[in-house]
Image 1: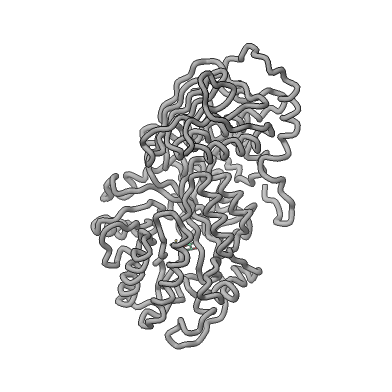
Image 2: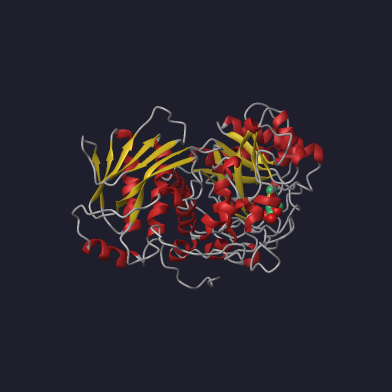
Length: 525
Ligand code: TNX
């Protein structure tokens, strides 16, 4: 399954459309009897809240349109049309809605702009998507999945079963993290990753932008961070970094898919790359050597120096100015060589600086030791008491327990990539847990959601990373979206099995877990 990093991967959604397009163009455009199809049998992931079927089907044809009813839906319409074209190879125009509009997708707005709730109604000649823009975009993912599943048999025309989906997420935060520090991932790789995570209604992408091994985001007031600190990675490769233009491009690209980037600068520990780039950031004034190993917990910023807080203010200020999302993640984990009293001083100052730049401070669960007040988010990875402490200080919690949600853990002892310090996480163990009851003392209303982090010590490019990410990410998307009462492993594992056909065609190097009876039926079978 693993492709070597030099193998050229067919770009997403490309090679198999050529044949598919020819079939569609040959097919007559005149209305014809529609085959029976059953929406309730479609193996959508994450599983929607409610699905009813009406037994007929919508045929994907050339020259369909997206109809918008309000100017505020223009950009979204273009986004949907662009994704349709990529997916089907058929052009799709965007047009203002008029009575009787059909042969396409009709968007209908709602007042609830902050919600991702949506209704997706599929009729023989039109698809209706109703919701906020974000809600409509989430609803559209069902249509994308159905087109991909229907393309399993390239001889068939592409039919989407008719019926009604009413849906909303259980959690507002459904994220995944990419560690671009231990190994750097290029702009194109991150965009490709965003394309895939969008398909499963993920709405936050956390970027771990700095660590001991590399500083990956240009800071104009401290240029050596990337010039020197970005010049290597684990194993001694050439590293890399995002210019501010690159980063803005990523933020925009994600925003087009209603995904918010959460930037993380990990501190006061995990800072060797910065300490190597600027000697004055060290208490002893001496630059550290660049680091390409995998140990953690040996570095710290100098808490006693005033310059450290000028550094924080500059770094946080420049990143916050480019990040429209609400959160700034300060890391705060594994600062083993920072004296305890100094760690508290540091966290308190960092939190104030983040607030000054109008962002909500987020940190790994250790950071709840600080004097937190008001809106903060603790990301639980290690110590349940730290998450409960965050709650008691009025903060919210994102659940990323390493034993269940770490994408860098091996599936089993034979896994090609990954670590195993927290657990072996097979596809079932990654799916079969409930963020609401995992830490009994956390109240549901204080759990913002879940995030599955991918640390990249053992994977050096997206092809390798895909082995760890897929298929587990599909499970995490459902753990975050679908209420626990509607989830069970038996049902999920059968649905997951049917996603293998299109994942393969898209060139996703997923792990073929022996727990799944992989199949790739056509949607009408
Ligand atoms: C612990 S999780 C870390 C990371 C490592 C990861 C490897 C966390 C907050 N810190 O620095 O990359 O383990 O699994």
